[in-house]
Structures are given as structure tokens and as C-alpha cells.
Length: 166
Image (tube, rainbow, N blue to C red; front, side, top):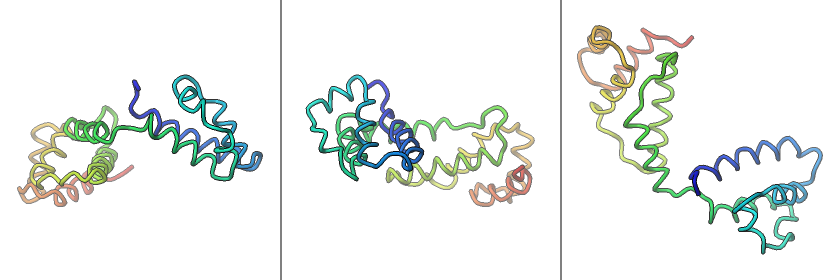
């Protein structure tokens, strides 16, 4: 309960383990072994569930489904987290402009996944420029090259020309 993303992290690790062991273990055995490795609240939660539920080709899916109810992320917590991340996004030390643009775009896609309405274009553009943490002179130069307009795609195009990947 302390980590609202614990199940998502577990799913990623489990998926890797399933792919690694698929040549050595049948799916039903993978599911039973994965269940045996559960600790703490997860083990207690599934204590009463019969092994036959997991001893089948779709055992991993059953296991994840059974864990999703008590341990799944709360949708509103995830949504709030993504909004907070968007509101505070800024280029990290050592992060290139290209990397920041990609991270910014990914974050906007995550907002869309939650059905969040798009920010107005001017707000998006200002958020992008503020997040880049440029000095005033560089900011003026970027805006000037974009026609002195807060048009998101124009500004992105200018950034890509001035700061190409690599």
C-alpha cells in the first residue's frame, strides 16, 4: 500500500522473468513458481486461492488479475501523479533538449491516456519553454525564430533545428 505503483513494477519484472524462462518452464509451472515467490500482503491475499487456478496455461494472467484488485494502482492517484509531473517538468542536468522534448511528448501522451483535456496551445508552449530552463537571451532567440508566436509546433521545429539529436 505504500507504493501505488508496486503492482505495475511487479508486472514488468514478472513479464521479463516469464520471457527468460519460457523455454525451460511451461506456463502453468511459471505461474505456480511466481505465486510461491509472493511475500507479505500479496501472499496473504492469495492464501485461500487453490493452486489449480494458476496451474493452467493462463496462470500468469490469473495471478496478475487476482493481484490487481487489492494491489492495483488507484486510477485517480496515477492521474494526479501525471498532472503533477507535467506541472513541474523541467530539463534535468545533463539532459539534452532533444531528450527533454521526447520526455515532454511522452508525458503529454500519458495525460491523454487518462482522458485529460489538452492544455491550450499557448500554455503548452510556455510550459515547454519554461521546462527547458533557458536563459532569457536563448528564449528570445527561440521565440524570434518561431515568428514571435507561442505556436507549439513552430517552437518545437525551431528547437529541433537548433538542438538536433546526438
